[in-house]
Image (cartoon, rainbow, N blue to C red; front, side):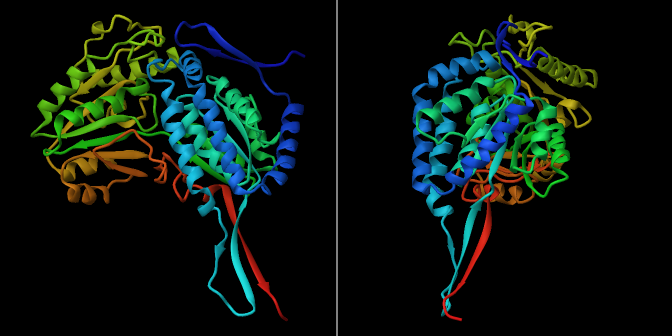
Length: 465
């Protein structure tokens, strides 16, 4: 019987960019066995050595960031003007931060002295961590789990989305090149059914998943027969609120970028904006003019600022959201004819700014995941808070104001894992990355980020009986 394969269709030209055989059951079994054996030795490696290997892995990838960026552009369509920086900036920042704090955060927790006793709590690794990573930010989403898990003494098996198989392979090359012991990091190209069986396997100690809400439910179902934890970073419908005192020019610039970068294909992209009525018209005018300056085209052209969406089906979903809004009375302020590359039946989609929107429209209630944003006028902070919270998602939210006291007061009432003032669509590795409601559960990065990948083990030593 011939082996099953997966294909990566490039959104640039619709051609097969990569094809990989799926792992057989025998290969999966071998990977699990190797992972368990390797982890027994890896957990004994001093933390300083683990840190050194992770830093060397980073240096290896940064040195090759241009090549990796071009591969990423072919796989997902992100403009080449931006794609290398996923490694050079965000990836590097996260690796370095978690390496910087590893020794302190993974150290034994000492208990107050007690005569005749020594007592402490040790952070034990969980064993083998299964990382299920998405295509849209494959390096950034995966590193949140891979590096902290390895630093904590776990082994890792990575299953990356079929759209970005080369990311998993480049990780493996980098770790091998810098001397990570064989079996500590592995990857598997496997399908959904195989993933479910791996999750059910007793040798998996934790599952870190980034993806859709439906995918999160599937992970939960697969893990339901076992007493293991799962970290779930799911979707978002992230709002922004522009107060009357916002620095308008900078606010517009940041919110356009927050909605349009990566063609809006980010879980924490700006998807809905609420603007105080006193600055609404001026904000919308500036937002539209800046959006019109984007250049939709071949992402291999350095002048392109908006590439194709990952698949035609993804672009069609966004088109459906736009049409639903227009049918219900919304107004589109961007003429698609301004973007000649825009064409139905392809993943090339013009950006759109919608007004006269409400929460009965898909574009304001469901994750659109495309270069589209809806803008509503509000009369007060209270109205903005109510609308921002009127969502089944809760990943990030932002407020744009010069009044920090007002920002904190409003932030305390917003239902989200991260709340920003005058910033959006950014992950600070010093802060916990977490979602609530249908945006998931669990925490990565920050000083809390090692907790998901360790368990406490108490040591209670009495010297004299």
